[in-house]
Image 1 (cartoon, rainbow, N blue to C red):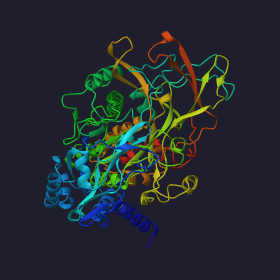
Image 2: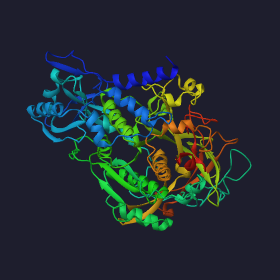
Image 3: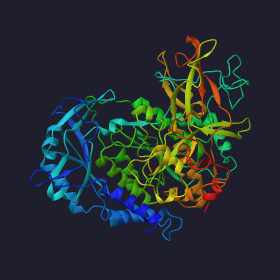
Image 4: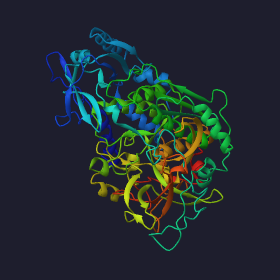
Length: 638
């Protein structure tokens, strides 16, 4: 068997075998192995869960003939396949692969018999959403529940593997919501503070790279004067740097979905004000819509940290990044209503209803260390999207190789899924005429100005950087074979799916300017603008750019990784590698976060500090294949 077929078979087995039912439970029951998260252990144990606590969850049913779904997803995405871009409609997918109504009825009947309220079943029959109490869940799934102290949160989990009636052994593929795994998802944006209720970019800062020189500060890397960090790039600057400013496309006729948590009440007025300030068109009627996926859970649970305001900034960034790149594209925002535990249902809603051809997701889980029963339903949703021609983009993360966070090297998931496009990040220098000067891999360290010197000695303490690395759970997909160099695998100590695939600017120190209604310390509520970054920026930027490519091609590119990797080393991408000499900027912060009244603080931010990841010529695990080049749209315009 060829190496390519062996790898594809390994990928198939990974996806199909990551979760399987076992009859090793009590008589008449089948266990769900992989349904207990690793953090639910004796070390973290706090106390039994409150039996009266309300609980919302989804019982997932697997696709009919999952091997055929996987094979079709590969075929419609492979430029060499006769089935390339022969996508199914949502109705066709349901007809061929959705669970039968009889199976759904069986799950629904069982849940009702256990006292649960059945809330919602999507059109693709992928899950049955239900609500009840912990006591009911304990009886129905044959386990006890307990609370655990993890990462400053008190979170709930079953204490043993779940089980279901044996009659459902070949029907149920997973259950999401009984444990609090979703509490550990993170939006990948960086404002650099943390900010108070309001945040304003400190000045002095530069309109473009090198516009203002940071006179009076020592340069630890040479004789020249360091530049002040850019104030925040505009859409015109980013499009100019990536060779898109002269494109005859604005995304008209294309639809991009954005998935986040909550929904900002001022988003439309904020985007329109921001657009006017940038010289961009405001939203036309019905160009922007906010949707809450039906059947999601609206009851905040005790012990859960709710942070809607933090996600308002994420939504603002995502929407303004997409609109900035593709001002003619329609945008559908789908928000999970309760502390982001329903992001899977939000993605399923977009895919099941065919709401968009491109989906951008600026969140993820630190590492891949999740219950397999949590991963599989998500992967099933992603595969349906691929079969239907939906390009699904995920930020690669903001903690580099995660080694300083979790103590070992790993990429984040869902960015590591082999059927999504993982978007990494760079530090970008844009010149006075919106021209591309250079890029480095995004990885930042910091030192503070004492008045006479930088402390700690530069490069200083590591802060953040683009996520990447080699998967521990997914095999190397065929489209990466021969493109990802062996040095990437050697550095991470294993072979597998490598992250990221492509990149765009992410460094907050060369970030994007966004506008948002904020609450200031004096109590006033008003619109203001500030610089923001993270791979939360790079993913929606790429989603907007792909809307231009789809418009040019006259059809969706869908899951574009096989096409992207076929263009490796071509004029479609700018190859990002380490700079010849160290690059750094001086960043000004307002001490109080909003103005200079409490003084200024100065930070030295050194770039391309990427831990075990390396920015090298060709594919690398910081920037992937590279960033969009002037030939990008032309290469995809077919």
